[in-house]
Length: 284
Image 1 (tube, one colour):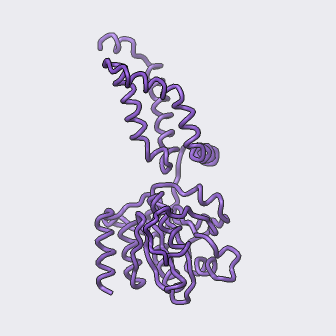
Image 2 (image 1 turned 135 degrees about the vertical axis):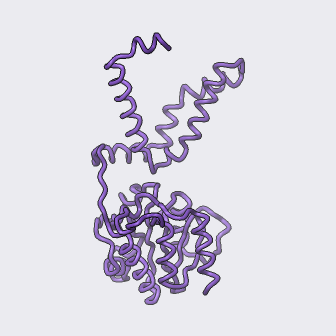
């Protein structure tokens, strides 16, 4: 330890600071991608490789050596979409991030009003609200909007006469990023056969990401919230608004209007949200 301290100098500190900077921003780049979700699995594989090298586990060590030789290529093939998105974000955004202060309460109000208005007119729609997992891969194949969230804009997008009414609207960091976005359909074979493509898309994106989906059914004229692959009917505008507040706005904040909706996913926690949904359904 004393030898290490004697060799430590200003350049050592700079070296450590640069490595820490690179690692930190690399983690920021993978945040919200599948790579971040399975980072723990990768760490387990690395740990198994190190463990097999230390102890005399011949078979495990042989297997890990064979796997390790192709590990980088396997990662590139599996995560080619995520790598492309990370490089795209690196080129578009500065390392010094900045956030735009928006009125989260007004956004939630506009989403709730738009959803109930569309349901009353039997206009179908999908409003996907980003949380921690970034939805850029779906935004890129849609029609870019980059507009302020408002009831009028949401209703006009999903109106049957609109050329972009098919697909989903995606809200990122409090703004409508894109419309006419195509979402992955769920692969669950046990779903109600009466559920259409819109319902299957809402379930699919909520299974693959942590997004919250506001689903408006034109067939049934009702609004539902889809989370973690489960559809929960919401009886009225107040219940929908309260539920979105619970999910996205921290109750400990003294000024909720200054929060960034969609950038953090703060709230009471998933257990409380599920309880709130059940209470809403029972009170109908």
